[in-house]
Amino acid sequence: MVHQHDPDRDARLFEPVAAAVEAQAVGVEVVRPGLVAVPVDGAAGYFGGEAALAELLIDEAAARAGVECQVGVADGLFAATLAARRSALVPRGRAGEFLAPLSIGELNQPGDDRGELVDLLKRLGLRTLGAFAALAERDVAGRFPKDAITAHRLARGLSERPPLRRALPPDLAVTETFDEPLRRIDEAAFVAKTLGERFFAGLANHGLACTRLAIVAVTEAGEERVRVWRCAEPLTARSTADRVRWQCEGWLTARDRPTAGIVRLRLDPEEVAGGQALQLQLGSVGRDAAAAERAGRALVRIQGLLGPDAVVTPLLDGGRGPAERVRLIPWGEPRRPLAADRPWPGRLPAPSPTVVPPRPVPAEVLDAVGDVVRCSTRGELGYPPSTVAVEGGPPRRVIGSAGPWVVHPALPGRRGERPLARVQVVLEGDSAEDGDIALLLRVTVGDDPQWTVEGCYD
Image (cartoon, rainbow, N blue to C red; front, side, top):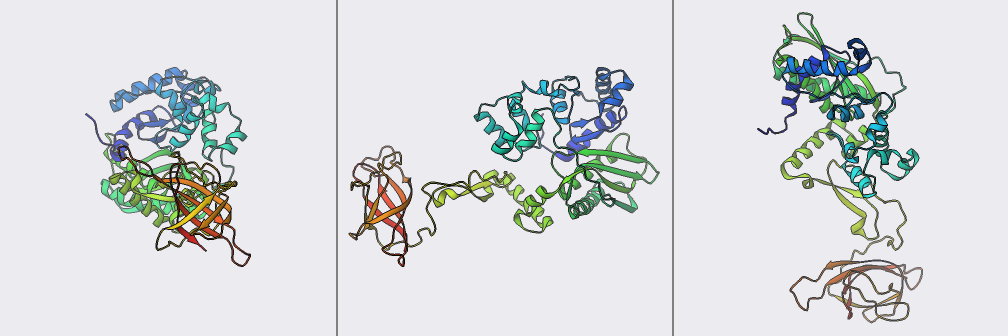
């Protein structure tokens, strides 16, 4: 039977697995439902080695949660995750050797957004993690998008981000005490939303974002439950609330559920990172981060109903013509201009043509030797335009041009059809007072070109 993706259900069903692992090892961190990380040194030494610990955890998960699991050991979460999929125990210090022959596609793990980077690396011939890791870090920083630095560290077997050397303010933890103990899931969901917003706002005030969150619950009978969630991306208010809700639901529905209701919840940031990137992301649709997050959730909902391309945002990009300078990308994709700030030979200066003549105005476009400029079916000019004469007027020198762009190609089966292309030019004025003239020209493609003016700015 195939079920639809349901994070709430997955988190609830995974809680017994996390509890089974926690019964044998300390420092358990839930990365996402289905993946749990454990510091191996202390537990492996106690149980007689990594292989013995792995076998014990597999047996414990099967006995207490009724599921089969895979265990892997390696330096760093990324390498350990891939080792678990292969049930491999990688010796200390050899994570890079283990990762080297694996496909570059492993960089795009669930929850990551590295599909575009992986496609780029494949096109460049870097098809394994080892090939990518062999590049110098300075070359990666200078030639690839910003997130490639993190991917390069992972491919080398290093941690995803260096440790934060900053002392944490003492008031980052958020605690909520309840007069009536929480016993129902709907009550926990309501509380989770409020706690998530308070927690996120407190971190944002200090310019921080949480990447590892400890959720602590105390029951009316004095029982204490603790679960740590590790996050690949900094937590937002919504994602914090989701994890609090998932964890409370897991505790309240587990077989070894607390004997009394929850009377106190505390959120502790176990690990933080600089929050500038997150603030920029949320501030892209306004200064109000909460409003931006609500708008983002609504847009993602629309994409879920109508597809990713149903919501697009403009991105100023490089190009010679106006149509090339703005690119529409699906909402949520990384906003990385390709070459907006690079020089573009032939790029037309402002202003762009804005006036449309009431009727087609004939024009004569000549090259440097006085021949009529032709446009091929592939959208290429025979020679660059040198002069343009409009409606029998005097020829003016072309000081800038761009195009052509084929706007009406010849369709199969339609004989005699003349495909069209557009060319944009800037003409030198008669005098300094006149200024330059920008024209948008239309040309019929073929050996007998006909040029007309479609738009102008004088």
